[in-house]
Each structure stands twice: as C-alpha cells, then as structure tokens.
Image 1 (cartoon, rainbow, N blue to C red):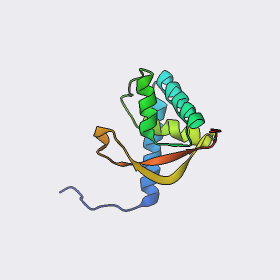
Image 2 (image 1 turned 45 degrees about the vertical axis):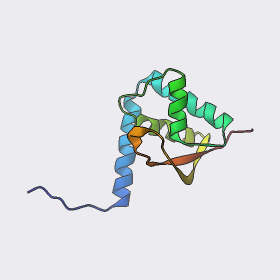
Image 3 (image 1 turned 90 degrees about the vertical axis):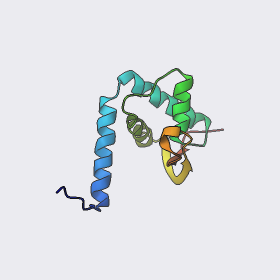
Length: 115
C-alpha cells in the first residue's frame, strides 16, 4: 500500500515551493517574463498596494496570454521584491479569478509609488 502519512515540515515545504517557482520562472518564455515584470513595475509606480490578480489584469489588457505554467508569476514577483520595487505586506486579499476559487493572495506594497 502507498504511504499516506502526512509529512509536516515547513522548511521542506518552503524549499519545495521555491524550487517550483524558480523552475517555472526559468522555463517561462523570456518575452512573457519581461512583459510580466513590466506590468509589476507599472503597478508599483501607480498603486501603493496590489495583488497578483491586478498584474494578470494588466497583462490581459496588454493582450498577453497566461503562460502554460502560471507559477512563473511567482518568479516575476520574487524578482521585483529582490530589486526593491515591492515587498509583501503580510496582508491577504481574496482572488477574483474563478480558477483560484477565492483563495487568498498576498498583498504587495509598492516601494516606488510616489502618488
């Protein structure tokens, strides 16, 4: 019989998450990645706070389709955070994306908005 015991290990869980996000970002189309990063920068310069839904909305308005692996967006946001453009607030807001089932999403704070 397969092992059905749950493994609880936060460090391992975060490491696995980070590896998946990194792999998705590394395998993302370069043009898509650049467009997504530009969308994050644009939001960060125009809004004090936003969630990933807002980035997807900007990309849709630009006519940019979602990549096969949507987790690549995590790599985009991670890069923006690393470059000092945004930081997580610790706050959460529900996603309006139907496929996300109202899951909570990280609220990002702009570090560059001057409005």
